Structure formats: C-alpha cells, structure tokens
Length: 238
Image (cartoon, rainbow, N blue to C red; front, side, top):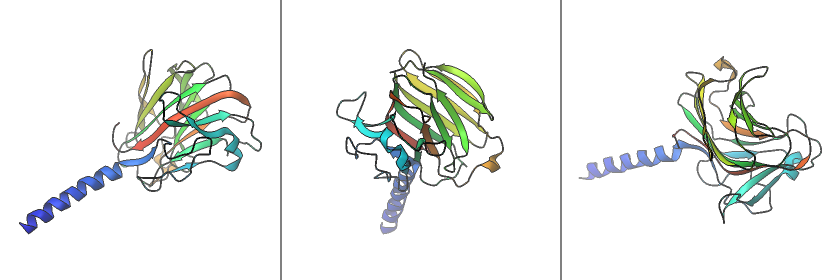
C-alpha cells in the first residue's frame, strides 16, 4: 500500500510540474500599481520571466485601467515625448524564462491600438534581438508580416483603430514556419505556414529566452497608444 501511495504522489508531482512548466511568460499587470511603471520582474509562475525596457522609455509606459474590462489593469505604451530614443531602446519587451525551440511555442496577447501616429512593430525574438517573426500595424490598421530581410512584407488584413484584438502566433522552429490568428470583431485575420525571418536556425540562440517586443519609433504623437491587456508565451495551445 505504501508503494502505491508513493507512485500516486510521484505521478501527481509530475502532473503539477508539467502544468507549472507549460508557461514561459504570463503577464496580466494585476500586481502593478496604476500610474506607475510596470514591474520588470514579473511576479508568480513561471520564474524568470521579465518585462524589459530602458529608462529613456519611462515617459511612454504607465500602468492604467483596462480599455475593455472594468476593474482590471493594463499597460499603456504610448508615443509620448521622450528624449534619447534610438533604434536600440524604443521597445518594451516581454522576455520569457529559458527554454528550447525543440517543441512548438504559442505567443499571444490582447490589446488595442488607438490614436494617430507611427506604425506599431511587434517582433518575436530569441531574447537576443534576433527576429523570428515581425508584424507591423500601420496608422490605418493595416497588418503586414515580414517574409524575409531586408523587408519583404505581406499584407494580411486590417484592424480598425480602436478595435480590441487578440493575436495568437504558433511557432514551429523545426519546420521554420508559424501560423497567425488575430481575433477581433468584424472578422478574424488568419495567415498559415508563413516563413520565419531567418531560414538558417544557427542565427538563433537555443536554449533561448523567447520574447515579444513592441516598438514605436522616436516620433512624438501623444494620442498614439497601444493598450496591452495581457501577454503570454507558452508550450501549450491557448
């Protein structure tokens, strides 16, 4: 009987460990204080996930109330005036805990782009700024994907400004391809079997810190905002 109990305990521990290690990054901003900068070390499981940004970006980042859910919080990333910005420090990143690319990964987030201003760029990287996926949302809401460097872009749809949307990207580095789904009112955007930016996997760190980075350029458009409700990276399909 004792041995049976030990087996049950072992199996339960395996299940709990599996659930715990499925998440690579989980951020909902509910532990942050409204009006403050986002806390860089994300509390709770998984261990080691972070928000990354440099001090020059501070004027553009604030914890705010949610744009869609009463009583909840969000991170507002704006094009407010900020000095010292350049191509290396214009982004806010969500850097996952270390993992390998041997299994498929899911990257997903919910947000709303509002106001007039510059394009919003979203990169999925290996955590060392090497681009795996690049998506751009223009001022008019057009969504384009980078198919290769130095900048071959593909139009895949439109997100009207002010529309809340959830972006889901499933990545399979073994096939060097990903699928994109953007869930929104008025019809979803779907793009399947798109190539990653670099076909040579030797470009990418492995093990890696899978990351989602968002960037506006250095221009000032105070009404231009991306209100981020949540960000997740996981080994499990949402």
